Image 1 (cartoon, rainbow, N blue to C red):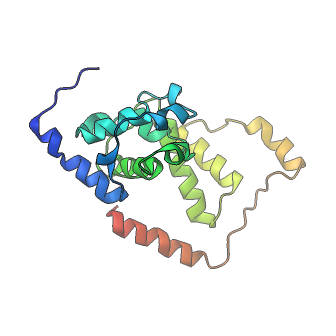
Image 2 (cartoon, rainbow, N blue to C red; image 1 turned 180 degrees about the horizontal axis):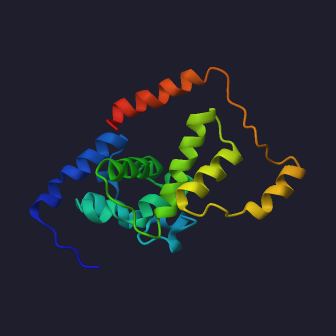
Amino acid sequence: MKWELADKALHSDFLRTVEELSEQNLSSCYQCGKCSGGCPISAELDLSPNRLLRMVQLGLEDEVLGSETVWCCAACGTCTGRCPMNIDLGRVMDVLRGLALRRQVAPPPTAAPVLTFYRSFLDAVRRFGRLTEVGLMGSYNMNSGRVFTNMDKAPWFLIKRKISFSPHKISRIDRLERVFRRIEEIEGT
């Protein structure tokens, strides 16, 4: 992949935005590659973590926000633990996902199911105050268009009491709803 770099890449607004939102000094990354060397899913991604970080440093906003890596990061923290400059790459990935959502950059087709799962997870937590398997599975199946996926397994899970059709809400769900509203106000969504 060949990149055309303009003079503005060295003084990137995109880099400053990501650094400010993530509270990380991305300019201190000297591309040692330890983050990519330890990443358990690096081989499955279109860009390794250090390559993605370098692209942020160069101001390649469209390429970064449109990459599969932003959506498919497992957020395991291995990269953060290995970074000699203490860059929290998981936090950077969260910021990049947020920027992609705000700027309405569609994830690549290979990462679209991850975005659907991400939204279904948050919807389930918002609705019940905690993760419920039925809420997550139902929301994911409906939103992904795969309505009857894994329905053949449901009777076994019900008989073994692994799942329940009646999810329990946490008490004082109104407090959690305030947290979600506040985050939406901050993010402007």
